[in-house]
Amino acid sequence: MRAALEKLLAAGRDDALLRFSLGNACLQERDTAAATGHLRRAVEHDPAYSAAWKLLGKALDESGDHAGAAAAWRSGIEAAEARGDVQAAKEMQVFLKRLQKRAGDAPA
Image 1 (tube, helix red, strand yellow):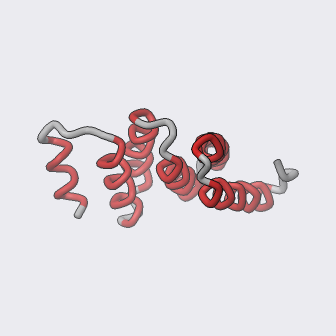
Image 2: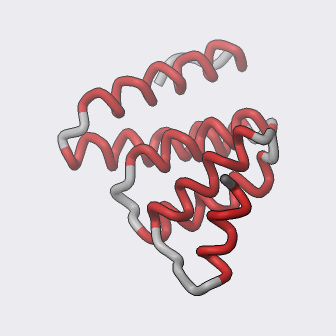
C-alpha cells in the first residue's frame, strides 16, 4: 500500500488525501518520522482536515513529541469545531486529556 502511494506522489500528485493516506500507511508500519512528515503536509494542503490533525497528533505522541501532539490536537479541535465535525473534536479532546493526564498536567 505504502509503495503504491509513494509512486503516486513521485508521479506528481500531491494533495491532502494522498498525504493523509501515506501518513496512515507509515504509521501502520511504525515509521512515525515519515508519518509525521506526510501528515504535516496534509494539514498544510488542507488546514480544515480534522482527520489529518487527529492522526498527526497520534504520530507525534507515538514518537515521543507530546507537546507537538497536544498542539496538533488543539489545532484539530479548532478545525473540527469550525466545520461542525463534533465527533472528531470530541475524540481529540479525549486524546488531549489522556496526554495531559499521563504528563501530570491540569486538563485544558
